[in-house]
Image (cartoon, rainbow, N blue to C red):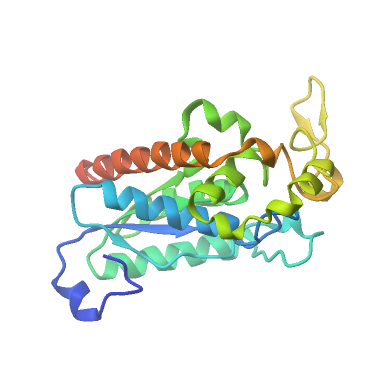
Length: 243
């Protein structure tokens, strides 16, 4: 049941106490991929995981702006503070719980959202009338996760498999030329990254080789992530909330 398409009576009559909330970001992904890449991916994985799941799950509208100030140097990037983001997610989950959907998986498509989501889902589960956990799709794709980058092979592959019309294929070479090999400027032996913003180490915001992410890889990523989300939904549905 997708809340965007449902009527209020559909929700009233549904037998769903489990919901997913996709959260993404509106931020640069190089010259070849859209600002909404993370939002598209969160929504795509959420819907695919729900379709695989044997049970009623409500899909909330996708939250399209997240914690993304690290990309502020690139035009079109939008961001909110971690406090604003946590409050917004908490209120959305609280709204779902008010209508009986009090077990929630927050399906995330943006790395910058991860710390805030870990914090807010713990707060919700400890203090509110709901139980929530985060799920970040690129952390659930096995050995492929190490190639994540930014606007790189994984994100470009998933776009090619699910939204091919959004990939500017004629800009792939440009994306490669301005890309960095890794995220940040790390001081050896310290565990410290000197760079706070992506523009400090990547000319065009890309990390990794987007040309290495083909449609076949994208289909595999979607299969892995949606299967993992299905398993998580089952676990959340069966687990007694820690009250």
